[in-house]
Image (cartoon, rainbow, N blue to C red; front, side):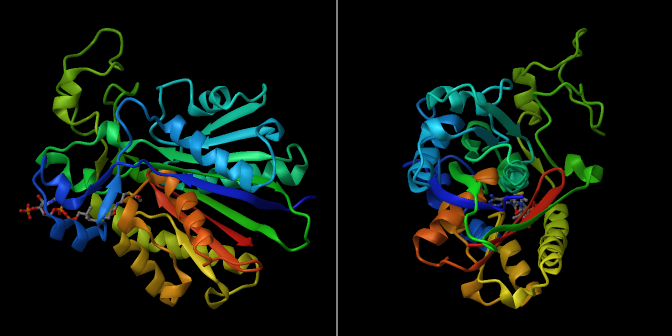
Length: 348
Ligand code: ACO
């Protein structure tokens, strides 16, 4: 059985910077409110027409492939994590394949929101371990800016999110004991509606206490209408306090699970790269685990929460800044909508 390793990593963020003060030009908010509650100072928004979830992923993927010392032709499988796909269907995996001129390799889309990248990495790890593939491109990319509610109703959610992409190439490890040591995935759909975007979707409002006010349609009700936008049901909804409460329990739990599986302890971690949900959540997790500042990497201050892209972007920046070195024990952890959560322990 082969162990897998991250052979190359890259990220891309759009050049348009929106500071908290920039947001005050078109919504009722303040730099003080956003920084105090989330730690975010600025985020990037993709060009409305020129950049998509796929185009950003392509830029990140090119860097990851080059750093892996391989070529686009050698990639034999794509796993693409996103909650903001270019189309309702098909997924972004096939669009990435087309845009990068890849051959007819398999392409899989993962819809696990903020945990999407950790789920994708775990799936890729299994394929490498069985020997089915040898060069898997794993991507997390988001263009949140297409669906943020800048009215007062949606402001606690919309200030949090930003756009960007991260990618890795996973290959069999040539050094024993180096690479992905284990991955751990969990979900609990009991609170699915607490962090969700309800439409476009085929539920017709079945799971919602408050049924949509837009007119009944004889044939379902899946199409996006201006009524849905007015209702707010076509924007992300978040019960922020419910998310906070669950996240600060599940992050440490799934990190401890990974450590226990490998007979390691929190103090052995050289770098924890948590999903960049909210700086307050990361700080809470750090404190619970008893980690020093130099054992945890955060960059939400600059990019906001980029959901499936946040872990690979943060991992790449930490590595580029020399904060992750050969032989280090790196822990990735994520929690998000679903709820879903997971971790990956890597000997770099
Ligand atoms: N600017 C200014 N005021 C605002 C804003 C804003 N952007 N958003 C909300 N407010 C106001 C509200 O209107 C309310 O005013 P009121 O007291 O006069 O009624 C007040 O601030 C408090 O609003 P709440 O919605 O109760 O805000 P809360 O204190 O819960 O903070 C937050 C919201 C930051 C989202 C918090 O719940 C939190 O940190 N939750 C964690 C969830 C999270 O970070 N999720 C990240 C994305 S999901 C993920 O990645 C896992």
